[in-house]
Image 1: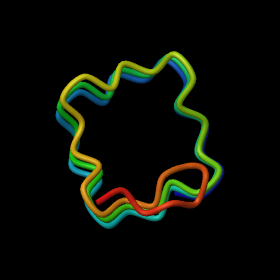
Image 2: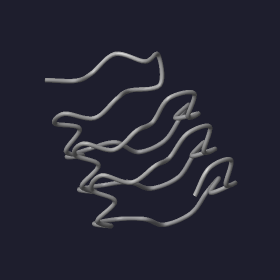
Image 3: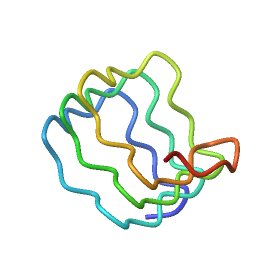
Length: 68
């Protein structure tokens, strides 16, 4: 799903565990309670996204760090 444009998408509760989400554009998307554990979010745009309750455990966050 590299480089996908998901701006303003309603992804509430979505399971994206271990997904390759490099450079995905999530600006203003609803990711409430999404499972992004062990996903690769390198370079992803999360500005103004609703991240309430998101599971980032083990994910590579946009700046390249692993969230433990």
